[in-house]
Length: 405
Ligand code: COS
Image 1 (cartoon, rainbow, N blue to C red):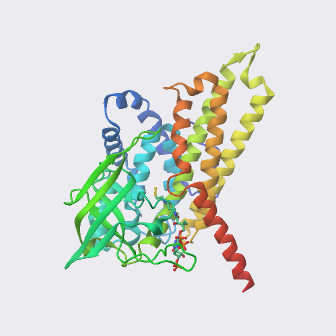
Image 2 (cartoon, helix red, strand yellow):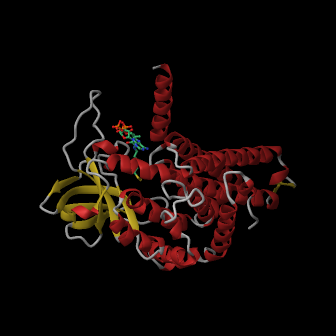
Image 3 (spheres, rainbow, N blue to C red):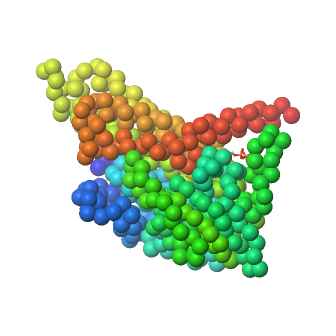
């Protein structure tokens, strides 16, 4: 695969360019046989195998912050969001499950990297970076998806820690994770003046999968198969040392984690869309109809132009958000714009590509059909498009109010 032109953009350093080229070369050969391998193994087994492969190749170490927290290695938070995004874009272009397996190592351990004690970081992060332990982020509940503050899972104080009770759902890597970053209430919910639930009183914990009282209650099957499950916590005892950050600081920690990883969702969407454009371009010059190739029709040229422009616009927003975050700045609104714009644009680009493929575009086994299924959930998970609009809109209003006061 040729080195993509966008790597010349000033958002990147030479180290990013080298990384993107290496991951691209690795992924192009690695995932050629995955379809047939996956036929013989469960999605859980495939995911475990891919995490190990990503670890051996050295890519999962980009899911956790570098130890030397310099500007070059990811700024103040230690995360290198541009590297994360480049790897996700590259993997998504080849294989949705590889992208998923990579991303969840980061999302699942992000709260530990941001707020874990040095002992907890030392215990959990190196195995994640090596692809030897699988991580998961357990935030959503049956009645608390977009409205995180409404979560009901409880963490009650005991003599030397906490007792967890409740249910989590839509948990990626549920059932295969070695540990979960779990968000639970350490104090009763309070109502704000407008009737919504306050985000106060939520705390985060790292809970090992083998902890007594933690069980997988339901495996969930979706359009783009990957390990996904509901979890039950019944009298699950967690030591105090496994709390991440201050008691009551869990909501902000969840949001800070999402500020890093939502940008990488945008990057994955760009990768899926780019693959659809690559496939559509190749198809348009091969396919003949009415005595000409598909590419000879102006309608096709217009469609390709729209697709390429939408991808570049999404990519610019994505790497701007990553670059801003890497400078140690809060970039919540830019991240939300990138996540919303890239996932929505990718859905349209892929739909356009399906249309260009005609009947083949909806046949099982076709790359385009797979992309059509793979992209859909990205407009929902880690904050649906509607949540991103809320974040951007509120930010605009607050800034305006700030300039007037
Ligand atoms: N970084 C740091 N702090 C943040 C933050 C961020 N990105 N976002 C919000 N906060 C802070 C706010 O500043 C506020 O602090 P104070 O109480 O000190 O003023 C506090 O957190 C509460 O924020 P807010 O009032 O905006 O909370 P809401 O309950 O209104 O929720 C949304 C806001 C809807 C944006 C949030 O719940 C959300 O992102 N939901 C989607 C969750 C999601 O992505 N789920 C998928 C799970 S992973 S698949």
